[in-house]
Amino acid sequence: MLSLVSSLSHKEDILSAAKVSTPLRILCFKKITSYPSKLQWIQAQPVQLCIITIHTFLFSLIIPTLFVTAGLFFILAAIFLYIRFWICPKKKLLQTPGKNGKTQLVVAFFHPYCNAGGGGERVLWCAIRALQKRYEEIIVVIYTGDQDATAEEILNGAYRRFNIKLLQPVQFIFLKKRHFVEAQLYPYFTLLGQSLGSVFLGWEALMKCVPDIFIDSMGYAYVLPLFKYLGGCQIGCYVHYPTISTDMLSVVRDRNPRFNNADFISTNPVLSNLKLVYYYIFALMYGLVGSCSDIVMVNSTWTLNHILALWKAGDRTHVVYPPCDVQTFLDIPLVDSKKVEHSIVSIGQFRPEKDHSLQIKAFCQFLQMKCVQNSAVKLILIGGCRNTDDEERVAGLKELCKKLGVMENVEFKINISFEELKKHLAEAIIGLHTMWNEHFGIGVVECMAAGTVILAHNSGGPKLDIVVPHDGVQTGFLADSEESYADAMNTILSLSPEKRLEIRKNARQSVSRFSDQEFERSFISAVELFFNER
Image 1 (tube, one colour):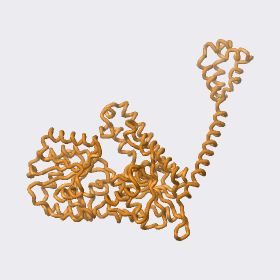
Image 2 (image 1 turned 30 degrees about the horizontal axis):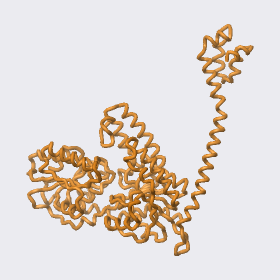
Image 3 (image 1 turned 90 degrees about the vertical axis):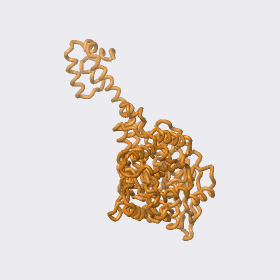
Image 4 (image 1 turned 135 degrees about the horizontal axis):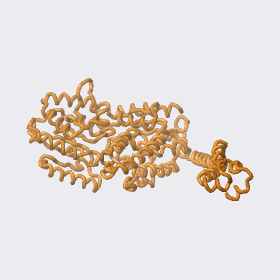
């Protein structure tokens, strides 16, 4: 640079040779002219010279950067088109002419855990049955990772658990990469890890079968762009709960300890802010992939509000309540128990978000009240243990009961039969639920159908959709703290048998909104756009 400057005959030549923009050149020229020689200016103004050098370097990169960007764009476009045209012929593999001579549509459900026995699986089988009733000329495919079971065993399991028998055969595509979406594989950044893992699982599914209509029924939103843009499919999804919600953001922002916001993070402002940034970035990505859906179905008003906030897809989003087996519980007689001992029943897996400790603490406060003869009241916790973590959680709850001195009044019923469950519900006065922001609450619906007076958490689906007035009459009670739960227990048991019976009858009538028939009608209404366009 010194040799370059010394070879110039005028001070402004320093700047023009460097190709500095006119405004910066004028500014620097004024600086230069205040010095008798170029060398003195260079020695006195190293910062200005550095700016000139950087400016020249950046200016020289503009045109090459444009060429590189354009080249990468065309390369990516070529790869995309190649994959798209390479994948499209796979769509014809399963298509066969129907009775009317038209090619049969292939409708695929992405449900890697279709052999499980939860509410999500009941949605899957009811949805397939509804489609087969309405559209006979379709081929239904299920992507599953249940390699430890045959197709016949999976279908028999659906009939045994849910009493659902399909009208037509279905084809199973067995996936080998389901372990990529297992939570234990990602001890940290679990949301991101599982979401990116689902992309690999979705790619495997796409390589094995390209359907006409793709429906994600488990909430793996990151697979939607694969099937939409590479597979050329019409996209639908049924969202049981958003992978991330605005409530999760507020919990981290307010530094509230929860089961998904550990104490060491909530008490540390630096870690809380870092986690908040991570959540915001993930929420943005989740919104982008979710917006690929042509039709969005959600299971409750609570889920609807969060999906609308994140996916911005209000014009194609529908509330489709999940099918609940209310008919099974309607044979329980509605009679107020004449027993001296009353029972409060809680139904739910022993998972941390179910907050069984809140139930025990609230029950302890209730027992300390003297308004009713509460010494003859028992709390019965009914639930399933999936693994050793759940078993350790139950052991911790028993220790809490001993610590609070209520062990004699609390019973644990682990992995009991359905008949035993119905027996406890038939004898119970109160059905108890304490999960914060549960997306829907099938257990709440079942308690109401069984004839208990429901006492649920004042949030999520129970608040917005289930425990709401029916024909202007109360259907249950809501609470959100130890004190409010204890007060509500006392209020319910203080009611006259006639008043309790009125609430129970009204609650049972209200849950007809969540029957299999209502689900089938709402589901077909939401997806019929796919079939009307063909």
